[in-house]
Every structure is written in C-alpha cells, then in structure tokens.
Image (cartoon, rainbow, N blue to C red; front, side):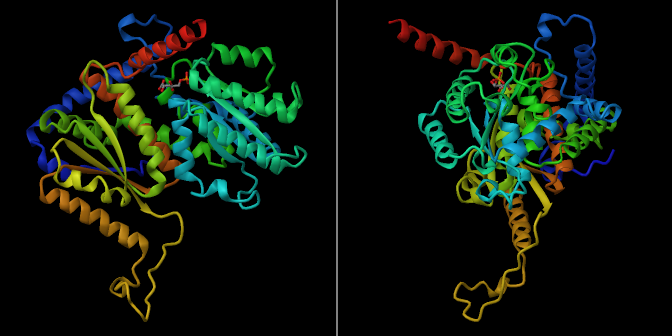
Length: 472
Ligand code: PA5
C-alpha cells in the first residue's frame, strides 16, 4: 500500500480550536467503524433494515475485488471483458457517443479531462493512436446539443467502410429508465440504424450497454441480443460507480490504464481501513470539513482546483457531495473553481465575501508535459523579462502560495490535497478518498449518503406534465 496523495490542513487547523479537533477523533473513528460494518452488512445474506436502505456500500471493496478476480482468472474477469470490448471499439470506430447522466456520466468525463490529451477530440486518428474520439450526450434535454452532435456525426460519417467514418454508442444507465439518457438513446439509435442499416451487424456490435440487473435497458439489450452488456453492481450507487464499468469502460476505450486506477483506489481503501486518525487522509479530510462547517459556519466547500484538467473532477465531486449529503435540510454546499482562471471571478468573494467557506486546494505537483520556460525578449514591452527563465509551473506555484497567504492573512481557512502527478494511480486514490469521506461524513451527521429521494419529485412532475399534455 503506497499512498502518494497527501492531505495537509495545517492552515485550516490553525483556525480551528485544537480541543475540538482532538474531541472529534472518537466520533470520526466510530463513523469509520459504522461504515465498515455496513460493508459487511451489504455483502452478507442478512436482510437490511428498511431504515438503512438504500445501502450502496459496495464501492468500498470493489477495486480490490476486481483486481483479485482478474489475478485469479484473467480471461474471464470483468477487466478482461472491459478491455476486450474496448479493443473491439478501437478497431471498429473512430468516434464514440457516451449517453448517460449524473453518476452515469460525470466520472467518465472527469477521467477523460484529467488523463487524456486536453484536445483529444481535435487530434487525427494517428495522433490519437487509434483511440476513438469521445462525445458526451444524454446528459440534458437540450435540442440544440442533440441536433448538433447528430449533425456532426452525419457530416463526418458518410462511408461506413472507412473506420474514420464509423461511430459507436455506449449507453449507461443503472436504472435503464432515466428520461434524458433514454430519449437520447432513442434518437441516436435511429441515426445509427439509418447509417448502418436496421438489424445490421454494426447496430448490434457497435452499441455497448452498461446497466443494472433489471430495467428497460437491460431487457432491450437482451431482447435484441446485443453482445456487449456490462454490469453495474446492485450494491453500488450511481455517483459511487466511477470505478465500475461505468467509468472503467470509457476509460479503457480512451487508453487509460484502468488497473492503475483500481490499484490507487484499493490502496486508499486499505489505508482508510487501517491507518490511525492522524495518518488517515480520509478521516482527516472529513474532520476538517465537518469542524469547519459546524464550528465556523463554513457551509460552503470550495474545491479549488489548480489546473484546467481538474474541472471535470470537481464537477464529479459537486455531484457526489450534494446528492449524498444534501438531505434532511443539512449538508454542505460544494463549489468547484478552476484556478488561476477563477481567481479573476470568484477570487474576490473568497477573499472578502461572507465567511462561510472552507477552501480545499487540489494541487498537482508535477506537470505531465515538459515545463515551459518563459523566454527573455530584447523589446521587453510586456515587462516580463524580470520573470524570464521561470517556468509555467514556477508561476503556478507562486500563485498557489500567494493566494493561500492572502487567505491566511485574513483568517480564511484553507487545506491542500496534493497529488504528486496527475496519473491513474493518484487519481484512483483521490476518487476513492472523496467517496469514502462522503460516507463517513454521512454517518457523522446522521444522513444516509446513498439514494437521492429529493430528485424524484422533479422526475414525477415532468412525466406527469408530459403525459397529461399528450392525453389532452
Ligand atoms: O448518483 C445517482 O444515483 C444519480 O445521479 C444517477 O447516476 C443518475 O440519476 C442517473 O441514473 P441512471 O444511471 O439510473 O440513469
């Protein structure tokens, strides 16, 4: 177990009462115990009390289970299926449309943004090493975005014998019944059949289904004998499913090393289970967030990401925290910012606005590409020669330190999550850390982090309005 991610809350801790921090230790350890008991319960054959349902704790041990299953039988494991299906798509399509919403989409987007070339879809097939372009659809009921993507595919794909002009679909929905993704699937399926032919080999083989054990999508895939149907385990909820086929399959298609993601996550779970309070990033992070909220009224949690590639990750976390803990009129409000960009928009408010924010910086220490050096210029009309010789990462480090000092000077709490680099292993640790911290905090504040009863009302109203109009 190598935990390379570091959590440093020394700046925030200076502003917290030390005795409170000491006092919370026993509650946090008790919350961890309860989370681990729920893992046992979820995997045992005992019946689960209604008050504990839904109980989607399956995500906690899943990374290690998938790795073990693969080590025991590498030709029939889920990993083998995922990688085999991804390799087939590499051979057969050059663009893939991923249809899904919420937990069935945000993880894949976060992984793509963090780990792929930032302009992946603009590269040609050779530059992408045959990895398909990936487009996200089905995450809105937006006429123009659906139309524009359909038109793009129609324009680009005219000769289906040329792999560069072939496209595929991956449709992801645990329930198999979500309006946004179902509508999009119907529309993209029609376009697909128009291009490849109704009941063509392609319309069966180039559509990948990722879905739960039951529901319309599962039944449709079975009835139409689609060969690739990947599971979403019953015991894993949507926003906790990034390390199931939901995130792993699109990641594998994108050429991301999915095993390393799982190793990172499995190591984080091991650390969560065994490390002391002081050495445990999950428990430390939970303690600081919880104390800042309860003792300092920091009800807003700003995830301050440093670098453009982390925005998707921040949006994934926004969903995780708000859908999991925003219940019973409690739960902190997450906000993601991307710096240094948003220092020029939200920075003012963070420095001088209402004192209701804990700022957690998400910092990547080393860039993935060669550091760019600022050159000297004889004209110096921009007066940047005083900085020449410095690298862009030097400028970023100065901005991080300068911003944190500005917040510290006026008593604004900050903490840092530090990743040595943005790779699969570190990202696996981070995803698992944030999911674990969310369920520990749920125990602490008496909220079931699984399920999202609050979104049912909008769904029911929308469907009622739609069907009433049709009948009328
Ligand atoms: O976290 C969740 O469970 C939700 O955000 C779901 O992922 C989202 O509603 C999509 O549901 P489904 O995968 O059933 O289409």
